[in-house]
Length: 101
Length: 119
Image 1 (tube, each protein chain N blue to C red):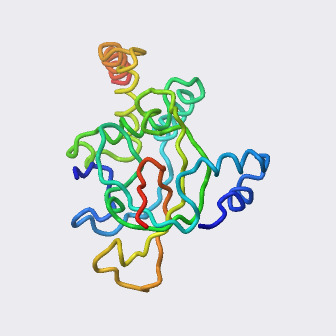
Image 2 (cartoon, rainbow over the protein chains, first blue to last red):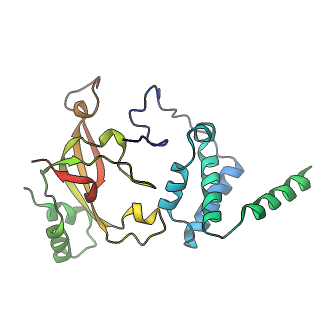
């Protein structure tokens, strides 16, 4: 059977579970809030978010933090559903970087 | 063969008892039935981890029926709904080098379409 990236029970050399907690940063809180809004407006379901998170390739999956995976997944779903385009997201990001510098 | 409707009434007090009975009548498995978890990795999202696949356990409870998450994950309507069972496994059956008590159990929720009879 093909083992998926998120399916970690018995994963070889997985090591112990990191149980460390941290105070959530503002971007993590915002990510959670955005998911909440998208859910309340019935634009993204929990199971869809899980599918999108579980579809992330192994290498980026390992490098991304929990909420970074959510961002990648939410972005992929919004593009898949035609609610945003890659270009719109990139344009907004560029404008944001410019305004910060 | 135990009585699942009693178990469901305890956890789902908001559902009239005749509805509970009707629902549990339609369920494929009964309390205490031995079941084997199917092996597979369908595309998209599914809620049956690899370490439990192919293993044999015992029906411990029935949570009720729920929209199929595999359908919901693809943007579908989740229908037909699936029975969701609480299934019990011996930890020593799941892990070859399980280090502690031989009595330890794993309780995990598994949807009906992932289970087949093992009795």
